[in-house]
Amino acid sequence: MRLDIISIFPEYFAPLDVSLIGKARERGTLDVRVHQLRDWAHDVHKTVDDTPYGGGPGMVMKPEVWGEAIDAVIGDGTPRMIVPTPSGRPFTQELAQELAEEPWLLFACGRYEGIDSRVVAEYATRLRVDEVGIGDYVLAGGEVAVLVMVEAIGRLLPGVLGNAQSAVDDSFAPGSMRNLVEGPVYTKPPVWRGHEVPAVLLSGHHGKIARWRRDEALRRTVANRPELAAALDVDALDKHDRKLLEELSFRVGPEDVAN
Ligand SMILES: C[S@@+](CC[C@H](N)C(=O)[O-])C[C@H]1O[C@@H](n2cnc3c(N)ncnc32)[C@H](O)[C@@H]1O
Image 1 (spheres, rainbow, N blue to C red):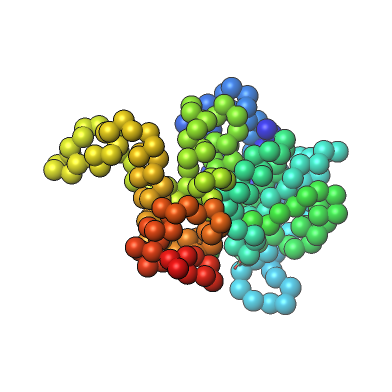
Image 2: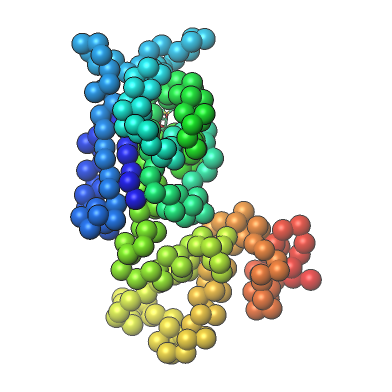
């Protein structure tokens, strides 16, 4: 997969040299190219921003410099373009999976009050463009949001995770973990500072372990992410799931699954 990232702070992307993503780059699974937006600014100060039309605080990134940069980076190619913004569609595991199937992504990192909106309008005429938010809070720039997205997408590429099953068991994974967060995890020793690992995990009984993990995922989702638990697919819940939700006095969707 090819990833182009345009930013006024290319140094933000140094972490992409380490760990799983760094190894994927070394192996050639990921071809990451980071570009300095100011290389396409022509005045002596390398200006990339100007005051907003309509007044108000802050500055807006200029369309001309973004247009020149994107044209130069993509040539005649048609990457899928991602513009991080708090006002975008939410970045989810499902979207990470969808983006992991693309051959080429282009990320445009905004700063200040964001990028002049005509840039998205212009490129949406020839590329698939998504404005994407990584959460309901405001960062100073798109760089950290892009790091988050690249890591979430990159670990889904074939061969990047040591054990491909990890992604299947993760929180939010499509399938049985859809709308569920993962439960607690443990390693050796069996007792640490008086805290014991749940006995079922030492039993070697795969069926019971799977059931326990599902129960814990349900418990944790109800406790920490009730809005996700409420959106569980009632038809995908088995008798045991329903009983547990009843014990937790939790209703899924408009119906009370306890009844
Ligand atoms: C200070 S923010 C601009 C926020 C904008 N005035 C608003 O309220 O929507 C500057 C840049 O940070 C990035 N950014 C900030 N929060 C983000 C988020 N939650 N998700 C994705 N990108 C974000 C975007 O690239 C944005 O253009």
